[in-house]
Length: 436
Image (cartoon, rainbow, N blue to C red; front, side, top):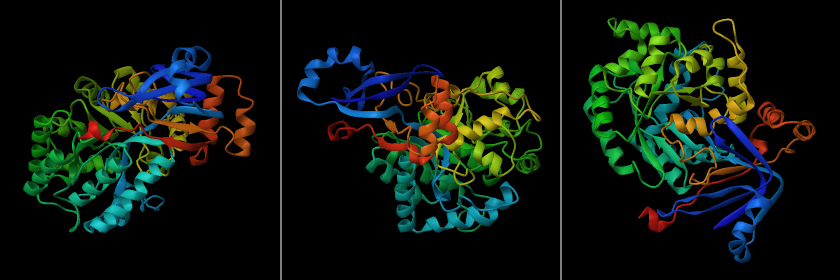
């Protein structure tokens, strides 16, 4: 058992945070050997309850700091680390001029391993402890990312990118082999420790009907793996899909046609969709990965929060590096606030600081099918957390000292925060006996 004393931010209810100004977090292994939260609350109330434990083990005390749930990133591209910050006129030119050339480099296993090490370190440095990530079409890129995540005991889902058409030589795969590779990778990695596999058709234009059909068959055969892709990000992309599938009602309905909408299916963007699409996502328990910095950077459009809430489908936040412009959850939450406020193309609204934080922690976990597993710091939840320093910069120190409410404090952190706010990232450990 381990105990930590500091301010503690946790979510006993969805989108309703509690800040214990002098809190205690007690963690330890569960029956499977996974380190989880055993208790969270006021130090004054909890300390007597755990007095016998504390007698043998000192409490780690971080005065002036805040312990918070590790962040959950619903959509990010490991191979695009070196694409971030590349100028482009829009999504499709950006893919052709920057993304595809970088991804071709992952034919080299040494390059895969080097980027995977940097990528995981950058996630952890920014306080991200759970991520659903793209790899490339090269199986070695999947092996490298899983191996590094396992080494760091990170909860991570990824998969080989399926793309057997409309892609350059060096990235384009072969239909039958791509599906064989996918199944082999599922059997090798899915459920190993904290790792999960994600069947990953890049997007409809990059996959033949035969490849999408095969992906759907694998999704049915392995119902506990994830499915990830992109949908309705850009109007040029949507027009392309319509030319490929003129009889389809919508871009999203193409994925439905191939059995790729279901629980644990996550689609990035979901900008240019209608209520029939939203109902389809709700009824199939399919989730949206909202990617605001990417959508603003590429000029793709604005996620319609009001319509999503009205129709009741699941969503959470994502960095979408490298179209996204930062690994930092604070930058992503601030961009989501901007996107919510935009009221010219949709209904504008002001997301509260607690709603924004929830979308990048427990809400994202729920959308991924990991509700109660990560993202809240409630008892039984895996014990991933970050330690925040509200005085990390002079401006942060000045602003947070004046906060008169939890919302004012959280909004100051969202607006002014970046990687400097993350003093440390602590990963839940898993015993070797439980892994074996």
